[in-house]
Length: 262
View 1 (spheres, one colour):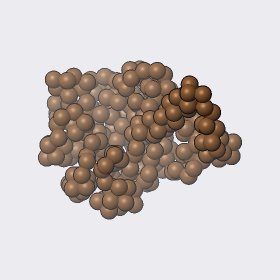
View 2: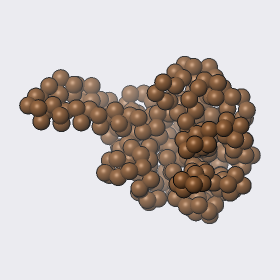
View 3: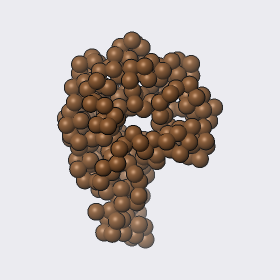
View 4: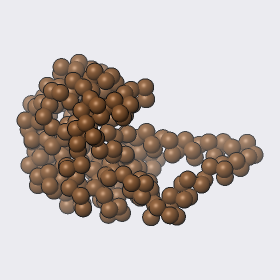
């Protein structure tokens, strides 16, 4: 399998969509994407739950199932590492490595509204523990996330400082979801010496602009899950209204599954 980290090229970023189940992963691999990520919120939705409501075993098992189903690297969204302590994070990374994943991301989000991100020293230690447990980037690529922009900590200087600390802790890829302007993306890419992943956001910079700013990877988060489920909602509403016009829209997905998706 392709070395995952080598696909991260600043200025020519890896487009890494987020699949929500084995079927969507196969469709995306069949479409030609070189790597695939999971999405915690999207996977939770397939179980009828909210983001943050899956267990470590479920998340790792889900990622491993996707990795076994496709011939491209799979990176798992492992949320906060399923524990506050560095030892708990290391246990999660070890499980991910044993499941055959090529990469994973670890957040610094605490899920505490009063203190939404971990103290920087602890956050750095958590990243260091993840890197030590990874076996190195040739085995498992660790993406360290600074999640403050998603939770009210939008000072760019603070975000850069956290990413630099994660870099010093050995993170292989850096990620600050929630950057909304091209200036923010460019600043982050310029201030660190590791590949940077950027999350596409509605109304934010385009993929081409993000590439020009120096990003090495672009992901979509849970957005495509909601695109897929929106199609289901639309079809349900049509049938309840007495229409079967949804048949006009089944072609692309049917073709993907019967020709290129499996």
